[in-house]
Length: 240
Image (cartoon, rainbow, N blue to C red):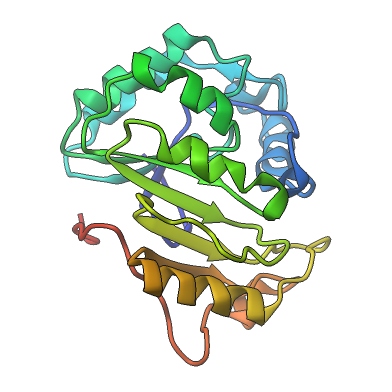
């Protein structure tokens, strides 16, 4: 089991690894940096560094978890990347369909391909589907997500690179907001976060503020006007 420090999930599961840049949010991709480190450490899954690869051996892993888990699917990849075959995506979904005790959080930047394929997939209630939206240029990803059959839909507004005014959050259950972290992190404005929080409140979308980010994300913390926002679309057992 791969435990994680990501605030909004419990474990990560990577049946695919590797990706390619597709928008501004990819510029300082942590997964790309981590993949290089794991390759240097001799991790077999990362022998090809950040090339897109599928790992059928990983499909058995969720069946072995004894307690219910909240699982971030593909922290090191994008399940809807064009190089991931539809048949493998279906196999990943079959695993999720057959493990209803776990909650699976799938996140993609390839919202158009998600929409193209969504009718070929089985959307059991334990699959939360999300899209990344870092600036106004990619806000159309929200519309693609909204049009899918996923029962729980969420947004990852991270790294937040600009204001996102007047979002249509109809049918969107959850929004995660976070600033970019690391030595090359780009700045985040407080007003952007406050506006998103207000939009979520007005449209009844759960709001989760992950971090301010920056070069020292721990020091910057995750308080917004003195408050921690840990709202979730549904309640799950954090101690599972």
